Amino acid sequence: MTLFAASRAGWRQPSVLPGFGLTFGFSLTWLTLIVLIPLATIFLKTAGMGWSAFWAVGFSDRALAAYRLSFGTAAAAGVVNALFGLLVAWVLVRYQFPGKKLVSALVDLPFALPTAVAGIALTALYAPNGWIGQYLEPLGVKVAFTPIGIVIALVFIGLPFVVRSVEPVLADLGKDVEEAAATLGASRAQTFVRIILPAIGPALLTGFALAFARGVGEYGSVIFISGNMPGKTEIAPLLIVTQLEQYAYDGATAIATVMMVASFAILLGINLIQAWSRRRAMA
Amino acid sequence: MITVQNISKRFGDYPALHDINLTIQPGEFIALLGPSGSGKTTLLRIIAGLEFQDGGKVLFDGEDVSDRKVAERGVGFVFQHYALFRHMTVAENVGFGLSVRGRKDRPSKSEIKARAEELLSLVQLGGLGNRYPAQLSGGQRQRVALARALAVEPQLLLLDEPFGALDAKVRKDLRRWLRQLHEQMGLTSIFVTHDQEEALELADRIVVMDHGVIEQVGTAEQVYMDPASPFVSDFVGEINRLPVMIAGGEVQLGGISLAIPAGEHPDGPAQLHFRPHDVELADHQPGGLPITISNIFRKGGCWRVEGHHAAVDRVIEIDLDAGVAPPIIGQQLVAFPSKSRIFAAGCP
Image 1: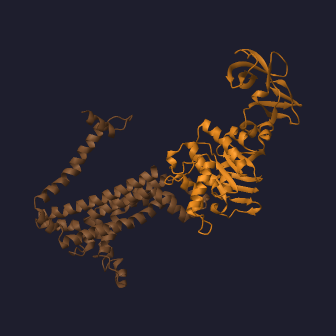
Image 2: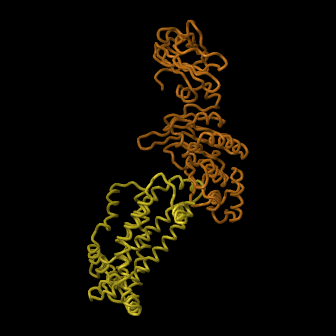
Image 3: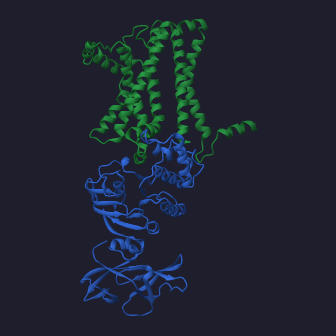
């Protein structure tokens, strides 16, 4: 009993706001209900199929190619979004221009748009006879029905994550810090790399992680532009749906399990890097 | 020598500075003193190169630096809210100015470290180099900011309300210490403040500003004892201000001629300024200000007496030597300003 009390006191920070027990309990229940139980059923369902069957479906050549494509394109799109999202956030925070509110609202649009709409629109643009595709085709650049098309779709749906993560941190970064760097002789580039980037780094990483996670799970916008050739442009979520359509529920959950474990490991890793960099900044 | 010539600056429709001229000698410690909106910070930032003037020139030793960027001006700047780099240790903060130099002029890593440590002990923070700014108190952070500014060996040190965010006790200590450091390092320094006490205590010369113009430049003694304008008289130190009439060489208030020479002021309305400690009290005498004592309290080493002047409905503040017995509330007395100044009416 005393041991329990001691360990409890260990987590518990004295605070003027009461209710740690209540809120902690509630969030745990909520997470269990919303996240943990649905995910656990996937594990349970997979566990029923046996190790060799799981291995055969979850790590087939087709599945492996799909994982590589899903995680690879999501990572590439995350990087592109980190760069351009930062640029958009920078412009939105630092400059006043007419129509700024409109641009800001435009950034959120990929959140609200049904992903299939985005997929159809992008396919129409980038198909070999589309508005943009017809000019890329003679140059030998194929976008639609290739991994590049998938990256473009994922960039589209992931942009708001980076912009909205970085924006408040950038706004909070005092102008005097930049001015201080300038008075000490730093160039604009040095100020950006050594002062601004470290300050917004954790937020940028958060934005990247969110965009990446969204990209890994994205289905609707990708299936139109990817062409869905097994082993080439077939993303993992599509493979799951294909399995379901063939009533191979075990196969679907096996693939889902592999994806889930991999995603969780990657996101946990990003979180750890973030905690470390934040500790360094706030120590 | 720093010369500011005919500097003017507008922010949109708001004239921040109007035709400012100022010369600062090497080794001087200058205070830019004024209320908020007086343009003092704008002037400091223009000298630093953080802000650019619409007209006029800034000269360093006779050389026009108006087109030079802040990084090329060789000034140290200390910000009101420290502006430390949060993700760097204290030593990295101090060494930053050296570490961003071009490869040719850049000292080695160990040299930068040694220099940072040396500067930190100069600002009495030796041994704290490995801490992060968040682990320091406000006064310590401002000293780090100062060490960081000094690391690039500036010819001119500029401080924007350097003690504004600190509590009174720390401010006082830091003030004295900054003055010592200024002399010890042979710096030329300009600091902005709205605190007249700070300016009077620290500066060799005080530049009093209001509404984008310089009202007076002078030593603490000159500015306090011989204010050039009603604004300076009012802003620096405490003052009693009464509306008077000048008629036939006499100063009149509420129909009574005061025992104060009108000097060369033309007839018409004017304002009479006198400091609380330049007033004597008497029982009945002609030519004084008849007052009814309304309040008395102890103010440091003297009595602060407040007397109501019925004819103009103003309260006059008077400081009396704490050694004498103070008057009683309700007592009717006559106040004589022993030293006073007359300014044209209409000014603030």
